[in-house]
Image (cartoon, rainbow, N blue to C red; front, side):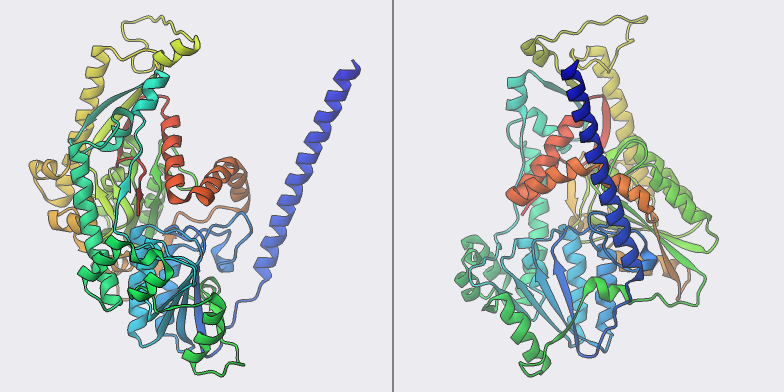
Length: 593
């Protein structure tokens, strides 16, 4: 009895401690919220440098507790400033007489290739105004250097490196592991190139998969190489030579090859070089404003009541409602809300997704189709718009893609795991009984599919694929055979997608918005964005709900880089496969560096 009371008391004390910690976190967040709400808007002074510090992952859309309070950050709750507001602020700064230049500092942040392209284009336009851009990093990964190369001057820490090496992918294959554990991934698919399932079936890439990556990577690298070479005043052949020899991986080599202008510590750039460019004496500090604070000063001015709605569909497409970084049926609801607003005259669907659930994709597709019947609909592609991501976009009147976007992947597959072999190894056996011949069909994960179950699954896949191709053919004005020939699950770059008719124009979100407004006959308009920001309490619950997963992913990313994060994502996806799924998704997570 005494032992029982001791353990009971320990449990109660432990619960009280956890409760107090939760209370303090909650109160601290509320305090941060209130102080942020009362924080005055920053006043931008004359002769100011706009500082862009890339130190966090960048999503397509800004996420904060309340956009009306500006772009403040409540620790642990608000996410980083989104690409939409970053680009908007840079373009506004171009014509702001108070902003004399930009200081672009890389400090470990991550952006997809298409996001890099979109921000780089905005920076290039800024530079065309005659204002300067300085870039600095302790070390530049290849994506960060692609962005920084647009600057007038690129600086590097004396012991740093520049990771220009060309593009490659590394894929993980689990067939050997699955064989050892006795797990069989039963796959049914349509598409010669539908390689999302290859990691479960093979130990290396198929010839078709290798071909699609060679074409895709070649087209993206060709575009990036040309842009970097032009900005650094060298030929594309010279950039290839630098990449082949890994010339930038030693700081002196990066300087000698022309990748950077000088090897200097960060303090020298910030304290001396910026002031010299501004024509100020060394004793005078340069006025700087962060991109977040600067964006908080911007006010959208329009006398028009007409609106262009932008609906952001970002992340994997899942069954049911979405959550942080996942696309669910609530995106269809957002589209319907926008259409019901009598002042919304055009709709832009911003897609950044590798695909996922066919069911949810079709629900969103139907919502886009209904919107198209009432107003102009334009799709804008981010880093990915593949499989289900392309499925939901294909009805649009017009599609814009970045050259570096990964898109297409028009194909379908289904997976049913069989753990019978693993069960035998660990002493677990399964038996079943039912009222009908196929009462347990496609749900038993401790036995292989029967021939009849496999035929039913294959028929389902074929019907979904045929429906996918038919939707694309109608949306793009192509024949079924034409779509099928470029489908089969093959992934294309934005450049290739333009050539084969999957997209209409190369460009970013701003281009898509401008085109949607033009199609609606609007010269002046107000921009409204969906999904709307979640409430404070919802974000608190979301924070605690996915804290474990985010902590694990953050730890792996910190110590093992983008490769480690990609492996984490792929293993997580594999662990979630515990029931029959029909998916429209591009090949599994890979690292393109």
